[in-house]
Length: 259
Image (cartoon, rainbow, N blue to C red; front, top):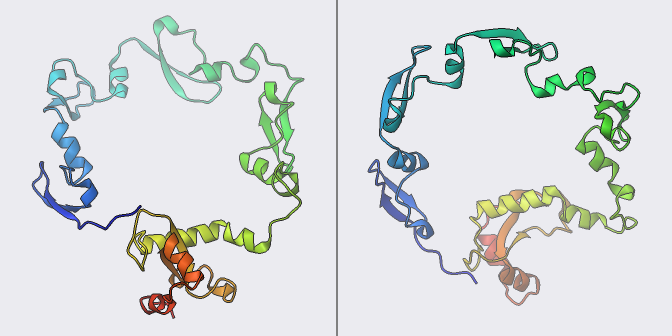
């Protein structure tokens, strides 16, 4: 059940002292923004100069004696005895210590790719043709027999309509497809946002809401997805409107800008 709307609350930020307005249900909030909340919990900072690049950076006061570099890259650059190499697979430049000078590739994935993999078999897998668009795409050799589509989009399009396991012979009417379409869902959401998710007749909120067409859905197909042709009603008011228990249609039309 919904309740009456409470007025917004004005509060003072505990960090910066600015006044801000917040919803009544969030009246216990102490800070005006996330930045002020983070700064209020941040430990005292100390400015330190990076020994590698000379950049000045901040660290917690508890780490002032151990922090010497501003980033991992600067730390790696400062290490002595490095040997630079180029990966033959991805052409990426990387470094190793003298003890690892026999290393050839930059990573495990490059080291085990293609013919470098001891399980490589040129007679298996390789290139597969997509069952939907006919595009050739590479596959893992272990999945060459089960990979059928080049992407999830092709997989979804292939198994839609008669190919779907949920297909029931096309029993859905054109009207049902339109009412359940993404276009109608977006229209209803836009109407709710414009009306602040509040019934425009009784003022209830936090209840089941319906999007009502001011110009009927059946008689005016050209106005079905126009936001100005919609109004937010709760389920109770919407049912009473269509059952003519209340003669409120003229009152609703009077408060709407659509004509």
